Image (cartoon, rainbow, N blue to C red; front, side, top):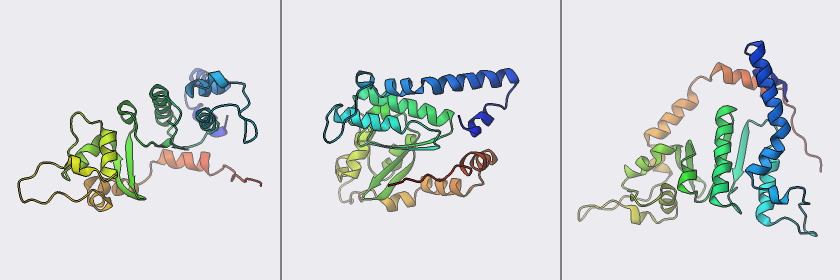
Length: 235
């Protein structure tokens, strides 16, 4: 356990500090089992992963093993790319729900890239970033994304899930979501970076970025991040 974590667990009464420390130590002691269960790896536990010369676990299991490796260590930022590959919808939901809980309780930043998440998975996210050819088409609160494109003339049908609707906008299938227009009016242009940069959501984000930092966050940086030694990888 890092000194930064120990310091955070020592801000209450002696009884509270002792209980918090014991709970944290129990979590770390059983954390490997928690990760294995979260990633549905019980069946291949204590199995050699294998390599190019020796096959063992499946491709989906190998991807989940890699994800599990990244779970260890007190990191402040976690980046995950297509972790749903090889998982069913229930396992994907459980993993992302756990990451959401970790992000909120430990004040971490978790960024997860998914191609077409299920509706219940999409609802777990706080913010959404939509990229098209490397450019940001939207970056803001999840609950505002439909209204953002609705104001630009692209309606999400009631029977369509939001993730599928957004995917259609990115893949040049926006014509199916164009609102009905009187005869003679030109349909709205395809949504892109320019529309996002003139939106109130973009302006609000700039204001938030330029606002003074929370003193507690600056304290976390000076006490927890700055003292960390730079990681060196030897080849």
